[in-house]
Length: 298
Image (cartoon, rainbow, N blue to C red; front, side, top):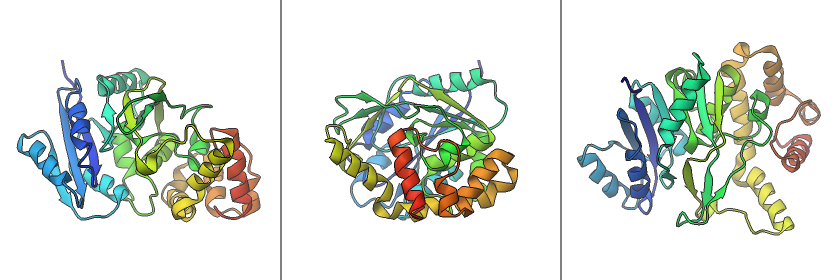
């Protein structure tokens, strides 16, 4: 039987505490032709020491790089991986459940798509010890190109994609890409097929800035959501990503999606705020987005 070749692409940064557990879960997947490419993004802790142990056993291909940020680091690692049938992103501190990759490849095959394909799934949110798992609800109302413009629905740590999508999504490099997984989701929704799996296949460890908002009061949760959208200077970077996407792919989009993306990239705040259609999965987030657009912040 001919098994497809798969490259797992990981970027690490100060991940000494959890990276071994994640790598072990990746290497134990039931895929015979599996390669793991890890680019370290200039870690200052003992991450490289841990990774070199795996490299010495020929379990991974290790790239030691300077710090350039996780987006560019993932793009560089993906470029260095070479030619494979499928690729997937891996975060440094998750745990993949058995059968994650084989389930994804099976569902991609059942989709019978011969163009760019992106597989994504729900996941289990966990605490820092990977206990108390809670199933995500990332995809509530379905996916399309418009709903990917202002929301990163497809979580990169669940992604598996074919070579056609890899080539298409990387033609412009990582310039002005805000989030690598959001970018791949945008490209797949515009030009290919997104295969969604309702079954979670990984434990997503929430630590520090990734801490879950569960248990917050309504007022605290509202503040958390505002910070999630407005915090850390995200809005200008999201705007740059939309404009970059339109510049690279605008002429190739179908007419309906071209108008949606053009409006998001070049429209006035009123045109953006009162555009037809649905952009966000949650109604409360849709309202917050529309107010953000009306204020001219995005």
